[in-house]
Image (cartoon, rainbow over all chains, first blue to last red; front, side, top):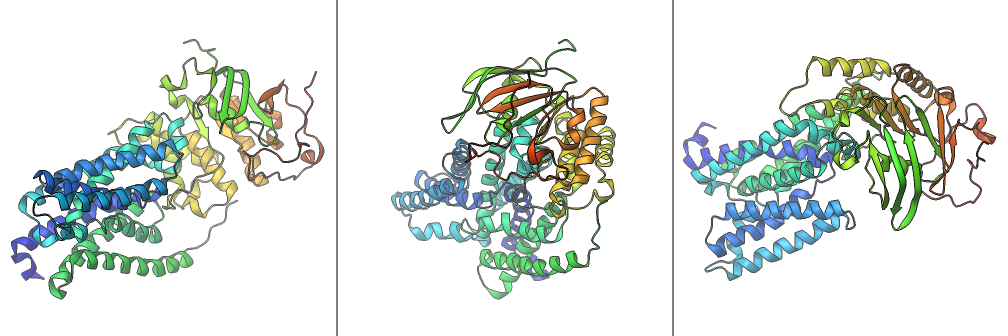
Length: 277
Length: 262
């Protein structure tokens, strides 16, 4: 394990993996509770257009991805709020639009081709630069800051939107906050697992935590733990087995979920059943 | 603001849902200390009325005021405790009874400031009031419908509001939970709180209610002392459950077809 951290690229990759493993499940817990588990996928597809736009205009793709992903997230939220189009149809529209836009724009970019997009679609953690690490660290702090600062209000919103409204909470602002935070998370995770697998890190560790925890807070903390185990563990093993890190990270996360599924059933059965007077 | 400021004032309130009129011209004033029940058949607009009073449903005509202020500009939300019809499960992330009840403090809390001793004390009192203190660490998902209803009431209690707005707190709730609700309400009434609740039948709540507003087809058809329950509704142990409370009844014979009392 020691030889791992001797390589500069591996150090940077490990830091990125650790931050993604913490940030993605933290906001993911709120998204799962709000039935927005697929929001990350929608944003991921839109972010591809952002990446291509970066190549076309000669801007850093991560920056254009942040902007386009955030705009896409706001669009999804506004469509959802209008309520006439159901959330999944709104997401589907963005899935197709995002991929088509990305492929279209990248082919217009000088020297760009679909293979340029591949490293963003499936991640290329070994090519993470020092600047990338800083951008990722900054975004991760922003995501965790949102969770710490607004967690209490987001909890009420995700529990019951009407109750949040009747408590005087700024429901629209908080909804947009979740969407934009999800967009930031997608861009952080893009380099680690790739846009197509981003959502897995927001959903799978949460689903794992759900099996074992009794409280919302417990689910979130457990899911962050599982997130870090998956990203760091997956990345570490990819160094030895020579497989794409993104894929093995998701496979590790899914393996954890299957284990927790069995364990959770066992834990619940051995728990004494109390009766209410 | 005077102490006798009306809690809710609706004049000419109209609400359309899917271009179908649900409320058609409601005039209603509820004053502090009143215990008002909104009664009516399925589809008569009961839930819509209380949602409109809280500003949760936009009105197509008329005005409504919360403590003298339109809902959009109302800022004293800690004065209102809203109890929805059922606990929403959302994406199924587990959450404990204590977490749900403590979240009732939200409109009294400030961002960045962690929960204080007052918050914890109010949460503990609310849990005790509904008899769930010993199970505070259990996930709400494991509770029965009646127990979940108690959690929702405890959440409103924790916020220590002046006015409670409850959407069918008795629907599908076991007899023990109904009695507990009645006792809790009696305590609130004693302390001069205002209560507005939607109900199909009052059961053990009947002696507490000071006024009944009966809706029929979006109109107020009775406003005064609560009418006595009739037919099978009056039988003890009658468990009245309407899973589709917002649907229009298919039969013209409504089970709550009261005549206004003279």
